[in-house]
Length: 437
Image (cartoon, rainbow, N blue to C red; front, side, top):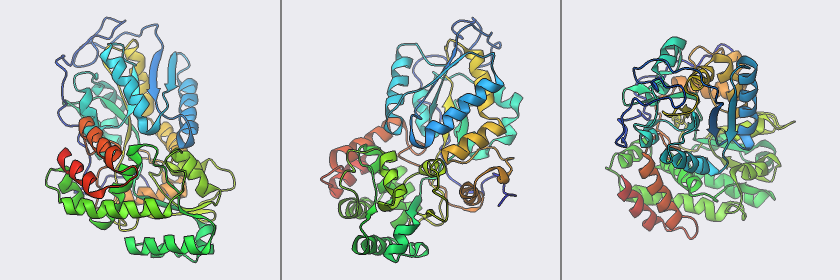
């Protein structure tokens, strides 16, 4: 596995393309605020101001805290002369971060950078992000960053963001001791029916929770539903729905299966706990399974005496063995920040090989550089790299923005919040979800 690099995806992959932007009536040039030079769309290079570079992110705990802590350490080591204010805005699935950014942009007091998802969700910032084409070109990122990540990082014919890592969404993690006690072979988990048999075996033969979940935020139930839809209906019906040509009955079938697992096999406190707290139950041996993006692995990576293939294992979510559900974490760069040149220093820093390796090893995600030596990554991440490079199906994540605009994603979350947070009404939920696209 040490020889694996993060190479180009095979042809035919799907992912967010950044779109054309929704615009806000402003031009794309803009000033740099303090320095008096152009913010980045073809003007002069902005001057270095005395202001600290302010960058906001949502990594406050679990997988992200250690990773962003290391990122800050490396920035201070490499750029000790660049004053910064890199700080977290906590909240499930970036919801508080997104609200803070929206408020700051509306008040014309933007941060210099903020963590977000690219692809279609980036369209909401059309006209408010500066071009960092110069960073991409001068640092060689137009060649060394993964082509699908390059595509998703563009808006209005320019690079507006830097990709930091890719998470895979269709993961099923398990506690090996619980599965052994239940008599479950993880290699058998290739269909919904086989998965239900395994959950029943855990319920009947152990004291553990069959599957630990969080349903505190509607994003989580939306993500679960997409996993069941991809696993039981397939990628084509999923993407047909996103394209406005969906089959409502297919959505109902997937929602019913999701409902069955949530209602009959999960933890009683799911509506009040966060995803790290749900994941803790698997780590403690109190639950057999956990389905989540592989940011969950960041917690396993940072837990002492909890080793891959010994204490925990992984398989693709049942029915999605031939898919890599595609997700990206990026930093976006607004116009009119107080420290635009320092923001460019930060942007170039984020794309460097060492930063991408060290951040993603801790975060549980995959570097987006195509020239990373796999020997620098953990065994689990190399397994994901292998699938990234060799699978042919890459459905884009919905709950994390690649597959939908901000308005569409908000409407999907509203449909879940109104109808699928307990009680679980599959028909009503499907009707609303069908009306979104």
